[in-house]
Image (cartoon, rainbow, N blue to C red):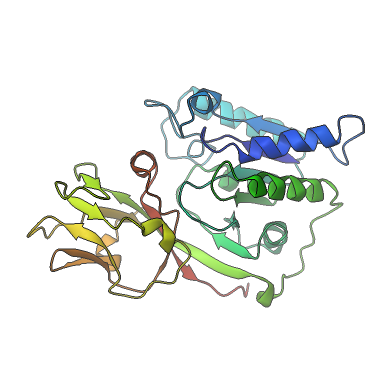
Length: 298
């Protein structure tokens, strides 16, 4: 079993869970072989997602659109080694900076992937964008999931992941028969939303191109109706401050957002995830993802 932690330096829950797991088995044999990849230790030392000038460690796995660099070569070598070891399952552990429930992500519509995900949460998200994620790379080799474990520093998060990893170590196989549709809340991530580089933004100051609502992160995993306001733009601005990339990488912001009387509002009903009030994270990663409910029928 392969487990990756700290791909983002400010997301320590996975590391804490692995430490607890290894302590449990310190005087006995593990139920199955375990490989652990510890990611961005430099950023972790500074308590940030990534250092300025660093690549994002969860955007550079095989399949990435990032140009070749020492980090992409390292991830390629990790994949090759795990292929030689005939990896059984892959689990990538993350935290959020905003208010989010615990949930699992997959990028294959495969019953084995759903089985692995549903062991962690009934809330499961299907995504294929952005490219170069650990989960998308390992999906070529085995069932793979991303665990999103709430904010860092919450004891329940590391305990939940520890229990999940321990349970996975005891699996003899991952069944490929369907998960009952009533046992999952299943969503599809349709776009990744980012703030344009030339747009200034804040949550309180009015002297900015975009003033976002101060409680935005409480809207995560809430089904929002068309017309919901996310913030205010400068007087008279008609240019959308967002880029919204769909699964093909096309900007479809005009399909999801519009400006009405200086208010930035949703154009259609969607459910956001990963909304955060951390401006650095918004710049380094994204503003949010938008999801739509999806049928589990395969």
